[in-house]
Amino acid sequence: MAGMLAAAMWQGEIPALFGAWFLCMIFMGVLGLITTVFWIWMIVDCAMHEPSEGNDKIVWILVLIFTQVLGALIYLVVRRPERIRRYGH
Image: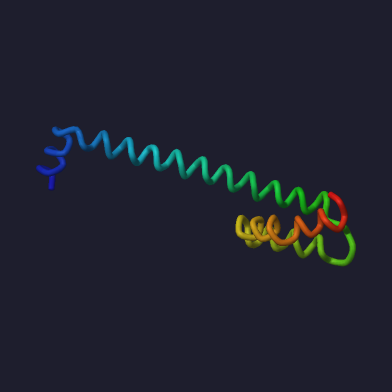
């Protein structure tokens, strides 16, 4: 095993693997940051613009908190357009 590692290092494959790993980690970090910002944006949008009639606001905030990005996508696709159409904001 050590001989294979030494041979790979000699041929320059280890730095290439490290570069690919590093780019993958950068991509995952950026993706995580984008989804977190999107999730927080949906929570703030719900808290600020959802009407306070009944328990809709509380239920949607709990859905967003407990289901995270999946709940944010559901809120964006299902509830937000309906709210904008009905209430105008």
